[in-house]
Picture (cartoon, rainbow, N blue to C red):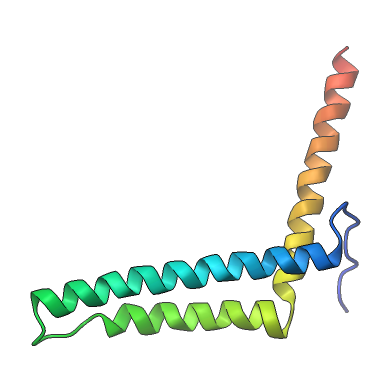
Amino acid sequence: MPMPMPTTTMTREEAEQRAHQIFYVHAGVYVAVNAMLAYIDLTTNPDRLWFFWPLAGWGIGLAAHAIAVFVTHKATDRVLERVAHREERQHRREARREARQ
């Protein structure tokens, strides 16, 4: 049974866009870092290639992230939960501030 979604000021569409943005940043870092590792590996010791190990390992994580974003949409739910939690903390801080005055 799925948990009820907390209410936030962020719409589901905005949360989905945010989840996509986070994924694309992750994919961009993956490409940049692994390109650098491949360059280092190929220029320093092309006889013993190792760069494909971090490429494959991180690729598995990136694939899982893609599934969470584009297939199951769990990443969207996670963004909404984070926003709701952040807003709740802000409301508690404001209530404490008002109580002190």
